[in-house]
Length: 42
Image (cartoon, rainbow, N blue to C red; front, side, top):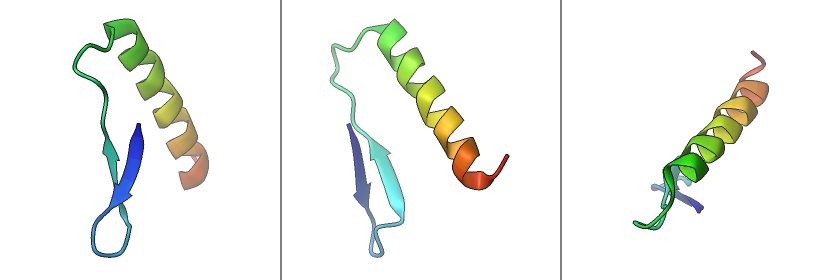
């Protein structure tokens, strides 16, 4: 789960359950990286 925090809501926290499978973490990070690059225009 992604959660925004910080004084201005400018920090994102990734809160995965302790029992998450490695493959699911990898897939989630791939999606996060791809979408972050789109937002950054790269």
